[in-house]
Amino acid sequence: MTEVLAAQNVTKVFKSGLFHKSRTVALEDFSLSINESPTFTAVAGESGSGKTTLARLLIGVISPTFGKVTYRGKSLQELSRSEWKLFRKDVQAVFQDPYGVYNPFYKVDHALTVTVDKFKLARSRRQGRELIEEALRAVGLRPEETLGRYPHELSGGQRQRIMVARALLPKPRIIVADEPVSMVDASLRATILRTLVDLNTNLGISILFITHDLTTAYRVSDHIIILYGGSIAEAGTVESVIKNPRHPYTRLLVGSVPVADPDRKWGHQEIQVASSVPDSSNGCKFADRCTSVMAICRQTRPPLFQTDKNSAAACFLYKTEHSISVENLRELMAVKV
Image (cartoon, rainbow, N blue to C red; front, side, top):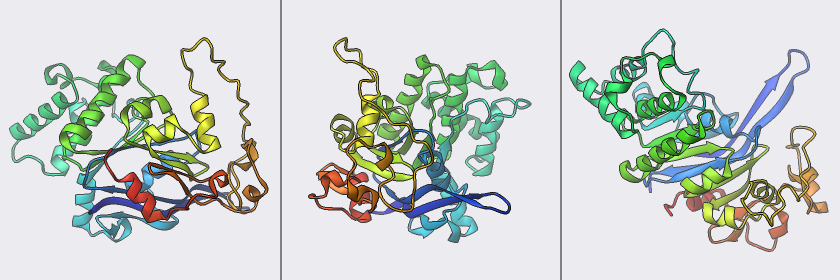
């Protein structure tokens, strides 16, 4: 099956400081494959786990320090001008902030017409208008109530759905959605999420949904990747990972989700707070916070062990299981559930 977008053993290191440079490993040895077959994959983890860095790498805003991101088998750094334009059409992004992406001096139409013009999607102004109206209706907006307005005249939910409509205009194969509902009212989140699910189901668009909210990820996703310290802690189908978490970090995340159960005491499990950025030199990055830590955890980086047919965890608690390769993981994450 053809890979549309893939990350192959990608590592991103940020350096800071003038004389005494420090290194921050934001993402380490990460692999993912998104094929022609549409999937809905969530990437979850706490702040600083590498989620937004991953999104920026996949859409080509930044380049990996090691490894490569490929579009239809070719590294983004090697794409020709025409290939880069095709990549921009096939891979669209929806960002977190529905306020900062707009120029307040332009009407919201500008964000849509620029996309139509840039990708030469229409032969006439009238045809362009029809495409824009079609995209707005696809995300649950009425063109007559949306177009012609300035950003401050619309709600955060409306502005975010316009951004989804903008991403939809070039008819992409993939949408990378980085925390698309974190800054809108709870009442509007369901509408935006339903729009993304419909795009995946009805139009065959793969969604990479980046979030810190496991509840939301569980409701909309086929697969999920749990990141910690820039590395994959656990991955698999959302049913397997959320309902039966294997990695101690995933268990903490799932256990921190409030549940309407009077018999359950929320927060009964102690969570160790990281005092610094997880060490990437050797051993398990979660060792200092793990209640199940063993000697081997501080000496050797755990590979991904296949805990069942639908999931894998980077934890030595499962060292009796078979470890899986990058190719096996990409195959596991690329199958529609």
